[in-house]
Length: 116
Image (cartoon, rainbow, N blue to C red; front, side):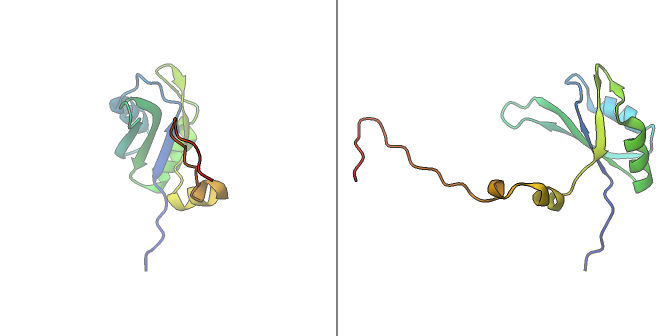
């Protein structure tokens, strides 16, 4: 049986596109030990999307970072810092119609008539 672990991940949004992983590491190391940083890139073009996840070493440091750094100015923007949600929490919040597979009508190619 799995034991429930507390979430040590932090979600950061509204990050400047000029920010680097080193900038985030310097900012969050003020609150404690940073275990990892994941900056989210767009899969199509590889550009930074302005959001990141930071994993701190313990729960107390996570709470300190959220309380201390929410609304902090990083380069030229004020960042938003909050606790990251687990996949289970995100599924509970998603509307039902998004979770269901949508069916689409097939398009009839040009030049052909519909057969009824």
